[in-house]
Image (cartoon, rainbow, N blue to C red):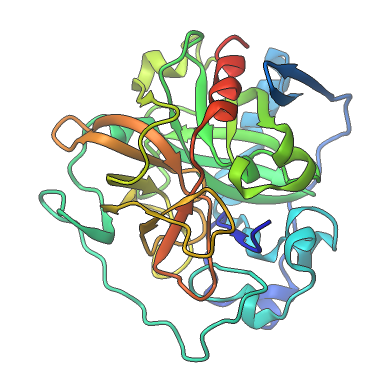
Length: 361
């Protein structure tokens, strides 16, 4: 098991969280408790854990109404999760209670590995008129399908609000988005509540394509039991919005399983910790490499995206002109001694079964 940090986060960013701002951070009010349904079943050799989220139209409307502009803006970084809600769940299981220096690392990284003693540099980022041949973090300004299919995810864990990234994928039910497992379920801990996908999230909080509540969520058994980084993948079947499926509104990306390792990839997401603010779609582009520590089957991509980018899609055979490609991984974690490399899980047979289950939901 890799000692790693899931890269969820939210705005406002870490600036000002030292001292009184951290102490004064107040979670949003919990919603009334209601029965939930979680089931475990086996498809082939893969154990799938399913959670029924917002089942009825009324429940879906309640979830969407929960996300006022203020709540979206005041969600806290996941790196503060175990400080806010205690020692249960994914972060405490992986790392134990850690010091504030680690929690507030500029790369959004929390692990048991040593942190660099010197302050990390803050890179400069700018919008490019055309995609770069290689970048560890630039604003995506080319538009195309990826600017619609990628979006921000807002969710509540333990009564505290967080954000992630996700992407629509081509599916039979036209409702599926793929994201990180930790953006859906806190490892062996609880499932996320109030789960909402906002595709094409804009620079001033615009929601040009609406918002979509989750109706069913899926993770693999090894993630649900042990927070195994090799299985940090979540599939979510969304409810319709205004009677329309998300795929019919924003389109989709292809997804592939058991793809050749290595090669070039584009990674996308909405990083929210400094030097980013969560308002822009950011991309990284480079060659995929194996985990140098041998702790996971994940592959690394040179990328300085920070917390909030978790679950953002990695695409190969990507066409920068159309903004369409094939998803073969997603942003999952970083090692604390290498904040310039993001790691993403290999989408193998387990992820394929997970997707097949979700697209039939």
